[in-house]
Every structure is written in structure tokens, then in C-alpha cells.
Length: 488
Image (cartoon, rainbow, N blue to C red; front, side, top):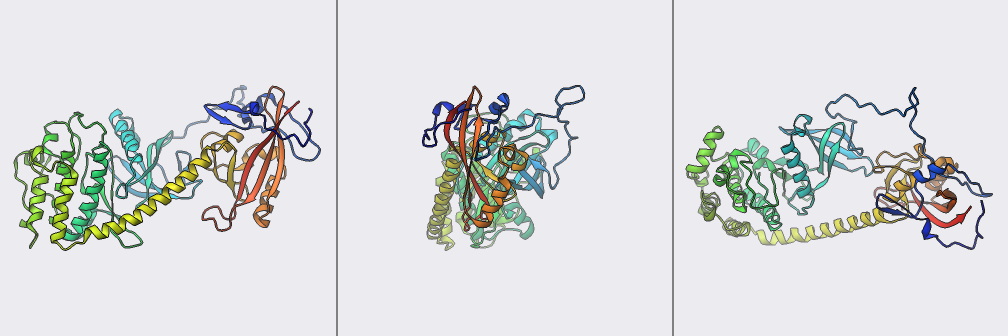
């Protein structure tokens, strides 16, 4: 092997490799393993990263992993390769909602796990992925954020969402009975704003009900409402596919199999508004009886059950729940216009309070966008980068770092001790400990075999994360930088 003079530090772009559409500045482990060559230098640890092959079986063939017997997720299980189960939050007809913690980020989320017995149903799977795709694309203060979704080979379909602390409107009504008019109006205003937003994106929710409206406890003691569960949402407004939805909230035209429309959601808003004012639903009975009442029975006035309720509440709910969709509010903004008038009659200075809330929401959105931009840049940059503790447990790594080590998936649970890096960097863990303790950077160099008689010299820089960092304080940041290509 020959080396170029130390002063010649040009990066040979011809040494870049491309795998699965990702261009990297360093050779992948796969290519390094193929040639199995090793190199040496007089002053720094040098070599090719090697991943041990699967252990052979007695007949010489690689062992295949044996699947575990299927069972429900329990505390300590890992779902999707990155979410550690910490407990159960709830259970429903479709499955369970688990409290989970992301292995790399350390952040807590709620994870919806669909029952394996029904997850194989094509319609259920279609609804699941439709909900996940639609909800993950929506950003609004009053919509529960979906951050991830997929399928775990062992536990099935899962969806990850922000963890909310509070209770649904349905549970609140069960516990306390009817909701005071001012509180009901405040809840309805926020729900309607969320529905207005999704309608502006040509999406219809399809299953608005008190169980899908969540009251969040906030540190500022401000009532924050989140709209949940987009399982029946759809982007095509003229679709006809039978009767979907919850019978107690289903519009008459949907019962008759008519196309979904914004009017269907407005009807459900009217039912929920009545339910909050009165403390129970307007129609009762089995499904057949419920459908008959939705089609034929006049909606009762909430003022029949609530003393001194402003007549505007009766008028608003009557119009929203009209049997003929054409007689309802033409859109959600029109519904909100009447709601604002009702709130004014109740002495609610809603406009000013919402303006203040919007300022705070704008600041949160700006911060959220800045953090997302930083994460996107980190993930896409071509230089391998990661953060780990002094023992070599990786918290976060970008795609280039995982490519560099030849690791599939994400950084969740990755231990540098299990990689081939210590073989070519014998002082790795001593250096990690020193950087974490002294907070002084350390630079090392290695030479990596790219195959085809080509070698790339690369620098590895270890530096201490800022002491004021919220998540990575005390950890070590690793950056790998190509220096030059060397002919052999």
C-alpha cells in the first residue's frame, strides 16, 4: 500500500459509493467486508470495518431467526424496533393504546396497537393506513399529532401519536353530567376550528363524536382540545362506500348510503353540542331505531333540558342537524359564525383570548419548525454523525453514520461495542470516557478499504456535547470525515 504526501488532502469524489439511492462519502461496511483486506500505518489505528457473518448451523447454512410465539405487547417489549412499552393507557374494540418511550430520543408517546385478529382484515388495514397518512400530514393546534406508523413483525400494525394528559368529552360527561354552556362553547369552538382546517384540505373526518374529542390538561391551565381518530377520514369528497361511522352521530344521508360531505361532519358537530349541553345523546335505541330517529324524528331542543339556555343554542343545533344536508350550515365557518354570536350572548370574550392563544401557538409552531429543520439537516447530511454516552450507547445517528457502520433501520438500541468500529479503533472507549470527562476533543484517523484496490483515509472527531444541552449533555458527538483517497 502506498500513501500520498500529508499535504495532499483533496477528497476523491470518485471514492463515493451509492447504495439504495443514498450517496455516501465513505465506503459501506458491505463493500469493506467483500475484499477483507487490512492496512496499517505507523501512527494511527487503521483497517476496514467488518461485520461478523451469521453463525452457521450444523449443516453449514446460516441460522435463520426463529419467530417467537405471538402474544400481546407487554412492558419492556420493543415495538417497531424503537418503541419500548412502559404500560397500557387504554383498550378499545380495535386494540390497545400503550405508553411507549422512543429508544433513541427518550421521549414518551402513545402507541395504538391494532389487534392481530382483525389487523389482517383488508378493510381494517386500509382504514389504518389511511388514518395514519392523513393525520400525520395535518398540523393544527387542535388535532392530535401522528408522528410514526408501521407494522411490527411480532405485534402487528401500530401508530404513534403525541401523549395527551386529560380525558375525553365522553368521559367528562359520564363523570359530571352536562357541561356548562360556556365550557361547551369553548370546546365546540376548538373542535370546529379543527374540522374547518381539515375541510380546507378536502378531508372529512367521518367519525366526530364525544369519544374522539380530548380535553388536555396544560401547565397554563388553559383548556386545550384535540380532535382524535381519523380512522374514517377520507380525501375524496364524493366517495360512496356504504355506511361508516358511529350510529349515534350519523347523518341521515349517510345512513341512506349517500356520498360523504362536509355536511356530514357538521351534523355530528350538532349532535356533540347537544350532548354537551344536555348530558346525554338526543337519540337512543338499537342501531335500527337510531337510524329511524335520525331520519324521521325532529331534533329536541337543548333548552328543554337546560334552564335559561339562550335560544341561539337551539337555533344553532337545529340548523346543524337538519335532516336535509342543504338546510344545514353551508360550511364550518358559517357554523362558527353562529357559534361566535352565541358566545357573545354568554359574555365570552372569545376573540381576544383566542388571539392571545394564537400568538403562543405561532411561537410553538415556529419553534417546532426550527427543530424539525435541524433534524432534517442532521439526518440528510453526507458526513456520518452520531451522539453516544461514554459507554458507546448511541442516542441518535444520521443515515450516513448508520450506512458507515452497515446498520439497517435506525439508531434505536445501537451499541458501538457490538459494531466492528472497536476493531479498527482500539482506543475508542478510552477516548469516549476521556472526552466525556475532560470535555476536550480527540481526533483519530483510520483507512477504509473501498474495494478495487482503493482506500479512503478518514478522520474521526470526538467532541463533548454542550453542557447546557437539554438531551445530550454529558454525551460525546462523533463525526467521521473523509480526507483523501489513497491508491494501493
